[in-house]
Length: 233
Ligand SMILES: O=C(O)c1cccc(C(=O)CC[C@H]2O[C@@H](n3cnc4c(=O)[nH]cnc43)[C@H](O)[C@@H]2O)c1
Image (cartoon, rainbow, N blue to C red; front, side, top):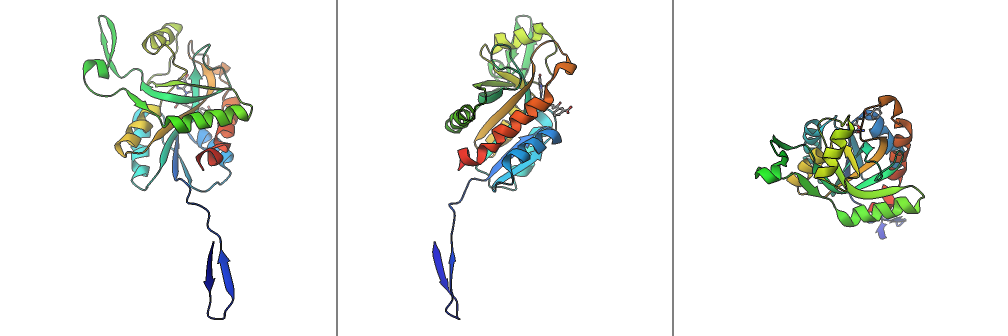
């Protein structure tokens, strides 16, 4: 509290709330952005953008917005495919690792990641304390939540064989989407911590677009987003 005395001797009292975090949330498409914004209900401190589909578009959009910071946290958020037995349709996944699952080289002996090839980094750590806090809040709110690696792919998986190949590379993978690694690359370049929140619209495997539960996944995204102001306070 701070008190100011004006020249006419009327005391004006202002109350100050502690400075809250400034957070950039990056979705792929507008429908995801709208769901996040519905959940946030105009809470202060959050900027939400739709950065486009895929790691390149989203990395560029994230980097462009981070320049307008400073930001304390960047979140990649949206719908995703869930790996069977790890994350079911309508549930929420909080990444504990963000992995570029198809960034590398095909060899006679299978896939080699950029790390194995010595070309750089194929995975990013998340702000694990905040990730755990968010997962606990989601569980407390009554939603099903899994923490695990979220894969970033440039091509959506469409066969059981590819799903198995990905699980061979990352045995405990929870979900796959197309943007997390791009968002994390831009966040790391700006030294800003990152999170990834995914809500499951479909199973990773044979492509059947008619079976995607987009409405349910967007509702789950709204629910997860509604918990962010309290968790990040
Ligand atoms: O058609 C719609 O109404 C609609 C509403 C919201 C989002 C979409 C998308 O198609 C978003 C594309 C976005 O979704 C991620 N995603 C979802 N499932 C998978 C998957 O199995 N494998 C990889 N990515 C997936 C991805 O991040 C895309 O950018 C449509």
